[in-house]
Image (cartoon, rainbow, N blue to C red; front, side):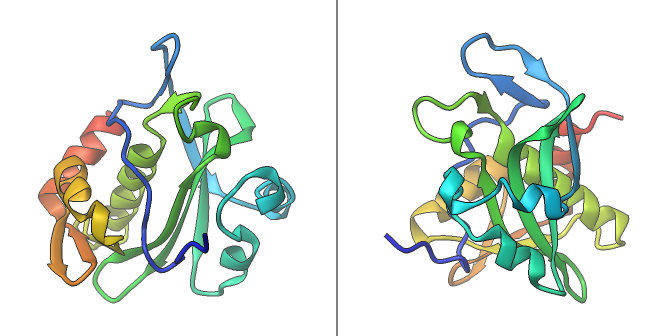
Length: 174
């Protein structure tokens, strides 16, 4: 099945205050940073990633960020690709690491953590937390419930200031 990279198709499994080990319930603080060429060697379809992150990284208008556990920067938990638009941040792609998918996932909270980070970037760039993305039809209601996103037209979803603040306050306490 070919994935449509223009539509966000990730389930927000749980809004945690970091990421949470599925088995033990332990929480781990996270860091988000830009990926580099070294990361591109491991985030490949051959290693189970669904999207071509090398192509995403090459796009001149995009920034690709990785989520890692604090103190363990070499194991990527998830990725997100964004672009700064005129009055908001647009989220192109978001993906949990292959080991954070499905019934046997290791950590909960990865997608929510990344979306909260994008909301925080929006505030830092003067866009009052506004983030947009294009959703798969079957997940529109899911994003409304979990992220507080609004469906504004067709598949276009917007996270406004109020919803962004809720996400940021959940993940970034300081």
